[in-house]
Length: 377
Image 1 (cartoon, rainbow, N blue to C red):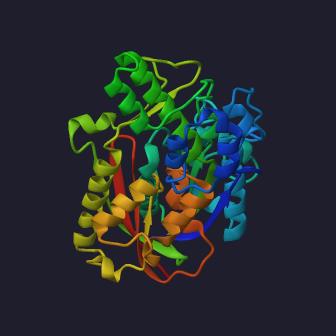
Image 2 (cartoon, rainbow, N blue to C red; image 1 turned 60 degrees about the vertical axis):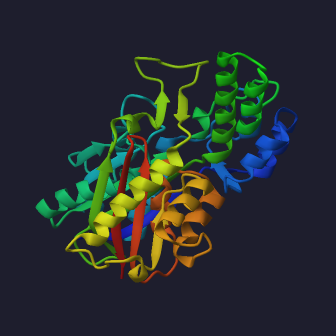
């Protein structure tokens, strides 16, 4: 078992409400797609772009910070909160799906910005493009390292700057999925045109769903705020699940209209709930688990895919969305949007008093999921 010694988050300075974004795009949005946006469960998000609403409408981006900057800030705050000797940190794990550069990796960029704080000889692991479930995988890597080096500490960073990756909305009008289905039934457009409209709708939803932020966790073997373990993983349960979520932008299709495309299949909520339930069941059945059922769990910290996805996981867990056990998940979604790899880290870093065991659940690109127990002291 390893312990959480300290944690800290970092946000960009620019905050935009969903109401504000809808207003800036209102002439382009049909009433149905506005209703869909209002069901995502996101009230606001933070952006590294100071002109995010104007950027969505076609203005050149004006970025004032980056995923790297957010990482460095979160790391400094976390180390300061810990108050220990930074020379004890022997491992840095850095994860992102939205890096400042494709190369070098985020871990190297963080090291470059923490001269005088972190030793130049520490081990570094970069876990880029690992999707939304990477936090517990990183905890497990840190656990392996700390078992071999019990006097050391490990620093984990999850950082995302989604909004610069969002496709700009140059179209004249955007429709809801049901509207597009009715257009298809009426024969209003060929198959390619219908597919293009659906993709445009996906871009609008992404613009409203994702947010930017970073979290840093410091782990060690001594007593801390919480203890991790056991942890369970599931990856690509069915071969076709690998295509449930995808960001095109690699060698097969470097970009489309100047931007990588993040694609999501309609059955993501259903498959996401399956992955979450499978990993949770394995954790509860683990012989070293301190809990064997959800009645013994104080909190369920579930990745903030969207309100629909959270509702689906709650239904599988037989929990009401209004339950105090999932309140933190919905609040993080409301206040920060989908933070991808950083979402459950934000939940762990909340400066509120917690007692007893909690479940942490992440799922996403791969398709993959991880679940684990965190026992708050």
